[in-house]
Image: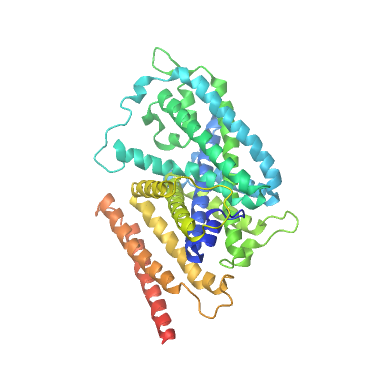
Length: 466
């Protein structure tokens, strides 16, 4: 309906106003950043596995972050740099590269499923849902929901497609077809692939550092055990071939998330909510090269020093939050803009949007409490940027003497401050009051300083009206 760059941000801006659009846009930046970080870390692990297969052993200190027993993850940093350079040179060349990679990824998936099916050990499916350990989110049905929530960022790619709408020849026709068809095909592939992988190897084999490269673990189990119980892979060549293909495949994922990230900031900058730096177009390559360089450094450093678990959880909660707001927007737009032409119309409204909202919120509730803290803190930082810069430079109301929506902005800041306290207490209650209280202290400091900041803004606003 709104075929321009910016994904859910642009859609929200046109339908629900600037403040909600800013919240979604800032959230999208979070999810794209940590998604690229997560995949880069996994790419690094697959590179280590591939090189070990050809007799090259990289030092663990240089391929893992400090929290995973290393010092710095250099391969993860370098792959972010390489993909950023591709994007800076332009999306036309990168789209050709991406098309080849997509073909390669699908071939890998089908090869793995066909060859791996005969190695499925049905005992690995018993019990199909392991019993809960007594802790929320650790196996059982709560574990299923937490697992679904954590891996939900795999669906981020469908949102990333919409960020490049402006670069599509016929977006009103091509975007819905591309998103819905790929969504259907990929969901089937996800399910079949996971079924084979957890049938070939027991789920406990994917724990720890090895689980960052799960396909390599499964392929090592595709063979026959000798008298000592050691499994000898029947396709030793397959492991290296598939891992190499995965390395190329992950490159496209990293590139797409970095693309989506820069395009959202491009749209926000053009609306005046961010400095012109982010919407500057390079004269030679016709891309937001400066923005790409900035994100290259930020994402690269995160990939080098952040554990995969933290990055993955942050990606998912950001994605779920954005999708929740978009579902709500469908309900609002159907009432507020009924006359606008729709080349594609969401069916079964309000049932589909309401189910979408409930599903996303349900999965968010089963994510770890520390993930909620990081989301709230990120949103508070974003609200600060909007209050201090975006409100003053917005092109939406630059000619209006008195800015609208400031009361809602300030009340949102206070509400997020209260939520910061709640999530901090929730996290400490979960891990135990005798454990480290760093996140609790940070959440309280953010809460009280921001509560004071937005209360002062309310007081100044009231004084000006008098």
